[in-house]
Length: 214
Ligand SMILES: Cc1cc2nc3c(=O)[nH]c(=O)nc-3n(C[C@H](O)[C@H](O)[C@H](O)COP(=O)(O)O)c2cc1C
Image (cartoon, rainbow, N blue to C red):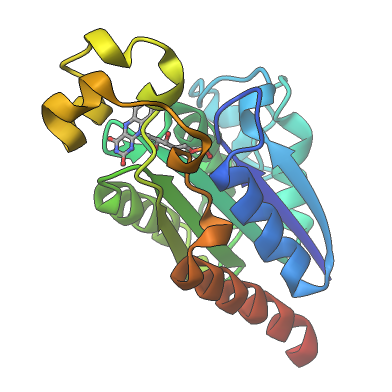
């Protein structure tokens, strides 16, 4: 059993999305590869459909090229995205857009098991719905979707929260945001939330069962 997992979590740190994707794969007990999308250079689908149609895999040459074949060969796939502007972020979307390569005549990833991760500070449901809707177009089997709301907007680390009345921190805390003392405890981690811990373990268990049944 081989699992491949992708996270489009923020660059330069190992954020909640990255750690959730990794924990689900590690908890499965199977061999896995983790790919941090935001550290790669790539674009969305360029519409070169005659390239992918015959082999049913995206063949556009950039950093993502090897991974589309690996997804075809993997026994299961994990995809995690933070929510940006109420949806999956653009790195995740560009990565997924090139799944078009799988979708000619029939889906080349039909029935492949997927586990999904969505992480945000406040409003994430539109991102969940979109990610599920998108992958359903390919006939994949969505085993589980793990959600985490951190209540930790990016404003906590931007350095300008004392002068900002448009950011997520102000939207959730109002005037209190302007005098907020930024302390480590404000940066919430999914590992400290028992409900999310349980959800991650449940998703890992579903991946583990795939091996037991196969
Ligand atoms: C450009 C941008 C837009 C964001 N928009 C939303 C949003 O609409 N809803 C939300 O819940 N969180 C939003 N966030 C917060 C991120 O989802 C949060 O910082 C993310 O979950 C952090 O994940 P990471 O630690 O894995 O990078 C936004 C963050 C950024 C940088």
